[in-house]
Image 1 (cartoon, rainbow over the protein chains, first blue to last red):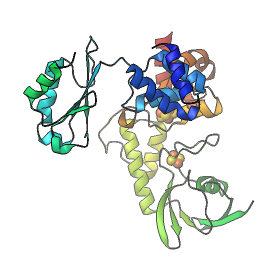
Image 2 (image 1 turned 60 degrees about the horizontal axis):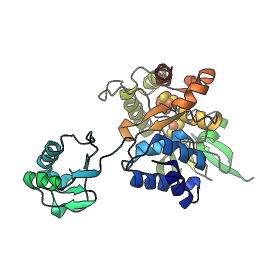
Image 3 (image 1 turned 45 degrees about the horizontal axis):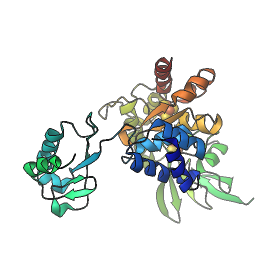
Image 4 (image 1 turned 30 degrees about the vertical axis):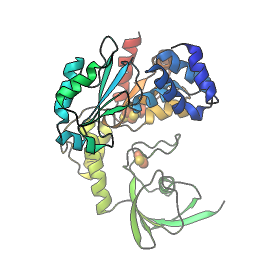
Length: 150
Length: 193
Ligand code: SF4
Ligand code: FES
């Protein structure tokens, strides 16, 4: 990520240390992960020490310190989805993408993550891809849906 | 500044407004066990070992004395059957992480805690935050911090700063109640060397 893009985000928030979290979220959503140079720049401009930034970046699941895939796949394994067969859906996602939960494939196509309730239990089992909810999934429907992503 | 009068373990004490119960007790020569407290650092309230009973108008509640500000006319009990039982459990939980830490062993003896009550998860760090806070508040170096959260939380040196400063300082080493910190630094040092 280019430094002036980071600078732009920092300036947009007024360069104040209290906007740290918001700035980090913006960098994350623009770049899909948080590169070290970006964090260094944020720390320098906001005058926030790196240990604080590290703590925040590792505390929230929304942040990633390694490159993420172009498509984020969230498989719900909350109670309602679990009883409706989320484990089999997860198996199917892992088989289609070739990676396990928490991983990103080498082509940076998919990142797979399990989540513990997306708040739409009636649609369970649920898989969310890039924020789009796919409800009432079956293993076959899951692998079909993932084929649509380039 | 107005003085606040109250009672700790049957002794009448006076304290300044805004002072913590722990400070007031220590001034009065009453001992309360602590792990994460350090007089040079801001109150943290991480270990919960300094828990005491506070009675207000006949109601009893449990508070953490190192972060609880003194109040007029309260009755504080630093030892009771309940307090001792809670401290015993806290020590046993911490010992699941650092079973052989001398400070914990001493406390275990005092409170009759068993080091093997809970399944061991020897992560060694008990998250007292002394090293992290000392580095930030006293040394203003911020060479060490916490990363991750919950059961995965651990200390982590910032390599760029640690390689510059830590070798000449090491003031946080003796603060660590489990001496895990030292091991973590030696590891970091070998990685950045
Ligand atoms: S390493 Fe030691 S001093 Fe630092 S937080 Fe852990 S237990 Fe406390
Ligand atoms: S000394 Fe009070 S919580 Fe640790």
